Image (cartoon, rainbow, N blue to C red; front, side):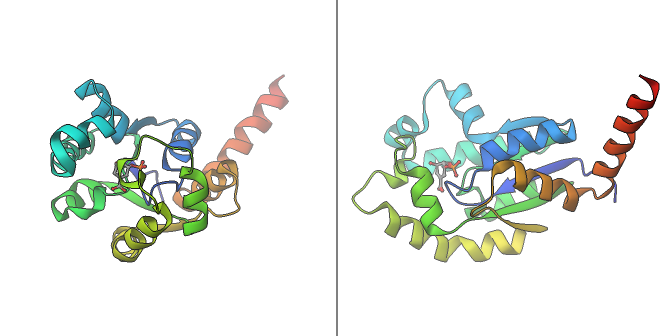
Length: 188
Ligand code: S3P
């Protein structure tokens, strides 16, 4: 299997999409794109502000336009927001020439990883765990349906997740890299 044009990471808040995406991009020699961060840069405002002023609907419109644009670039790892799969029109953008990876994570881990976060408007309430549980019930089947690879991230370091992903995406890469390293040593 040769490398895909794009690797698209989907999954809930707190799954580690940005951390893992950045490391995976480095490993594959791809460019890393984070849809939420680019929306914020373009808008000149953070996500809570966008939700506040334009509502979730306004944010979703920006997200759809952003995914349509970002799905054009080759050799990229794209981290998406947890709700990017909720609009069916986004699915074609997410899947275009891509391997879609679902970073699957337990509710406990999601709660733990988002505990101190103030940048996620959907979790700024008395019971973020209940919100995450509800979202999981709705979204897990959609993530699963879209995904080419389902990767569990609980109790795994980002480094381990990335290693396992590289093996799944392109089984030849590690061997090939080992070969290059070996040749480098022989010529030293
Ligand atoms: C959202 C997830 C967030 C962000 C927005 C909405 C969601 O992204 O897009 O706050 O609906 O799950 P992360 O999954 O990167 O936190």
